[in-house]
Length: 142
Image (cartoon, rainbow, N blue to C red; front, side):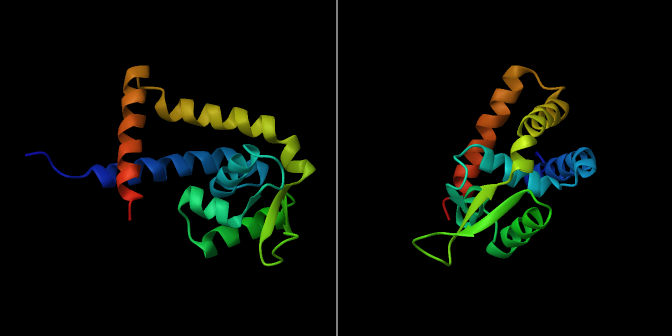
């Protein structure tokens, strides 16, 4: 009988990846969690996203995202400005510093993923992504 440790292995892989990523990102004054938020914001027009978008995309709690965004703002990576329609809703704007780093961070993201998946064939990587998407779809139903 197969031991059921899939969730444990996924969690361990994620923690290992966070550790590797933080080691690479620390010299740039940014954590992996902050990096993921910036990487997400790079995908959209500047100012078109808000905190709720990040919470939903990463399935993270409001207090967790608030802390990440406060630190990004404190370090000069983004600005949170009130939405004209709803003053409680803050739109997220990348600063010049964040925009200047966009290419560097894109290269880093690619290198980090290559490092984590270097021992997988393309077919294995495709299958892994397919299975993880399937698991995510199940877990996000609730």
